[in-house]
Length: 235
Image 1: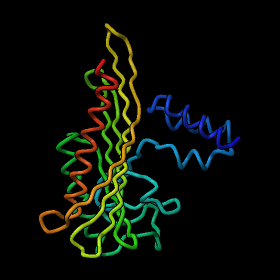
Image 2 (image 1 turned 180 degrees about the horizontal axis):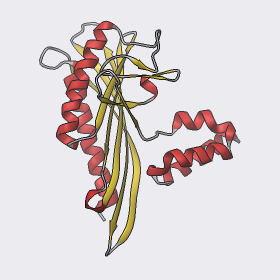
Image 3 (image 1 turned 45 degrees about the horizontal axis):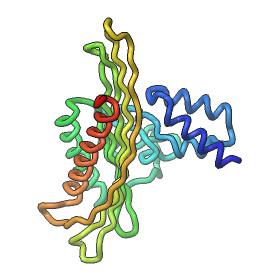
Image 4 (image 1 turned 60 degrees about the vertical axis):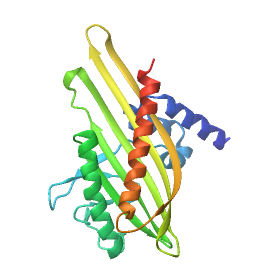
């Protein structure tokens, strides 16, 4: 019965406005408390923004940079609230994480002209994994409000030669728009889309991991953007 309840609950969440995910999820958990853990782990929620107290830069919060009640900033590599033994990437991977944050910061500015991005990496036995987060909220100018949240989870399995790697990318985009015009009144559009892709790529000085991942994320976001455009604006 609980599996059927979970399926119905997830189906309901997919049909409700994404800008109200947190409220709807909370209401659903109140109705069916026994599904709390499953719902929290299955439903993607809008990304929240925090500010690094050390350097004043914004970063995004998610389960991948959380340890207990603390969140790690990708800029200072410190937890807030402070946590002495919080999970950290290895020193080698931390260097990659720093470069990745700089690269996707430029990518975000180029494609979104604003917003916030964060990249978090963690070690695996034969490679590493990471998440690339991007959030851009509209300011309500031109009578349009909205928000774009993209979550890209990537797993990198390095081959024994060290010159090739297998990449698995799972991307989720949550989008909502609200227009308010005198002629048409208020209109809400929103939805989410998840896609997955795998690829083998060469790894060298001209094609480091960041470049390979960056191309995959760029291609995936373009495809999802086109799909959302066809679904919501192509009619």
